[in-house]
Image 1: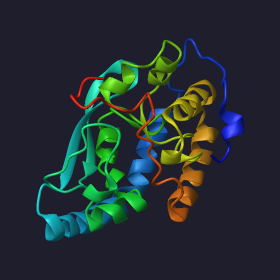
Image 2: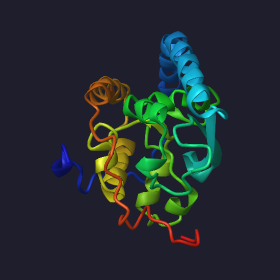
Image 3: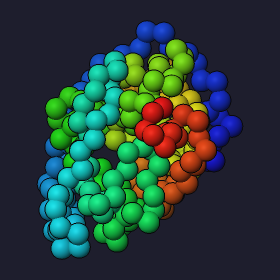
Length: 218
C-alpha cells in the first residue's frame, strides 16, 4: 500500500475535536461544488432508473462523531435484490452504472446532504458500520473523536486495498494532526486518487475488523 510505512503507530490523541473553522470549510466546499454535484447526481439518478429501476438512493445506518448513529446517503450501485449487509460488497452484485459511479466516487455525492446536516465533514475518517465499531479497542475508538468524512488520509493512502487496521491507523493520524492545511492537501490528493482509480477494489473478506458471520452476528 502506498505510504504504508508512514502510517504505523501514529500519535495517540486523548482529547481531540474538530479544529476551529472546520465547519466553515465544509460549507465553503459544499457551496463551491453544489451545482455540478446536483447536475451529476441527476444524470446518475436517471442512469440508475433506466438500468435497474428505483430506488435511486441507498440508505444505511452508520456510526459517526462520538459514536452517534446516523443514516448515510449514497447513490444505489447494487441491484435491487442484492444488498450489502456488511463491509464486503460482492462485485457481481453491482450494476454497470454502479461500477462506474463507484469508480469515480460519484455514488458518494448524496453525502453532501449529510455534511449540510452536520452529520459528516468533507474530510475525516469514513463512517463505519456498528458491528465494526463494536470491535474497536479503546485506542481505535479514537477515530470517533472527529466527525466522519467523505474522504481522508486512509482514502488517499490505499483506499479499499488497505486493511481495516491500516485504515484506522491513518484515521488516528488524521485525528491527531487535523488542520485546515492538511484538509486542503487531502482534498487535492483525493482528486488525483479518483482520477487514477486507485484502490477502488481490494476488500479482503478475511479482515477480522470487517468480516461478519453467516448468521449476521459479529
